[in-house]
Picture 1 (cartoon, rainbow, N blue to C red):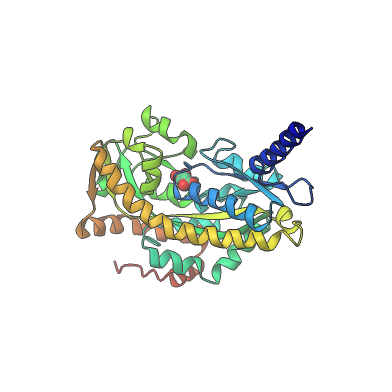
Picture 2 (picture 1 turned 90 degrees about the vertical axis):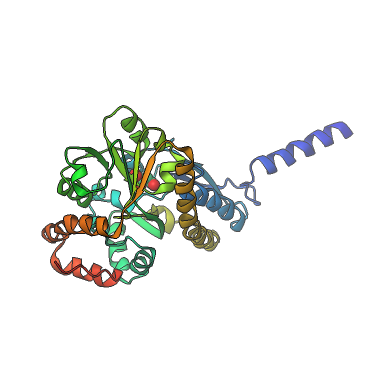
Length: 339
Ligand code: LMR
């Protein structure tokens, strides 16, 4: 009998430890699937795991979060469709991927050099204009819970990229944004949309010659193994939106929401504190591999890139309207250079 009691106690203890999300009332926990496309070691991967830990703790196990990294559940486009269908409850995609939802406005943030520094990016994301943009997503059943700033883009390629002319004829991987398409074309490159989960192979097999990304992604995805050159150009920015299915979020019980809101807030703070540090470290780690030749644009070289790419801002007036672009300049603090 004693033995049975001990075994039973051990089983219960195992169940509680093994399934920390058991609700105290014994009811099944609400499952939140959080799918993303990066490594668990990238800032988004780490923030997703922290969110899981905090959400389960702050809801006393009423919620169980399952994190699926590295496109293991869905790739770029699929994950957005899955969120709308309710097959997944949380994502944190790059906002350059919102076009296929039928919300084109987020592409504006890819205008070259618009938010290349952290202060401008943070100013933009804190601006009241974001509330209007959030409504566009909500109309598609998608609710933004937070924005995560993952830093500025650098380019990698199998040839050195120092002058804008160096892009001519290269096949460059882009995210889905129409502005990124225009940027590649303006540089004389051939843009190709490729899901992040397929990018390593595309670079390895020569489907594309190069791409742009934040250093922490280049490091954690090992793109340095399949690229020879890296240019620190800081021409664009990678912003994520932590998004959920609006219907799902709005139907959460009242005793669960405050705990989740707190977990969102604290994971956002963690993310925004971590990203810049990880990017700085990743640049050092990539350099230390000795596999990639790195170049930081000089002021003169950067001026040449800006001069080459400013026409994209003009061209995009046709897509977004001059007024909208000017409002974005104002909200982000961007001052277009005098030509
Ligand atoms: C990319 O697709 O290049 C990145 O945005 C992936 C990510 O989510 O960081």
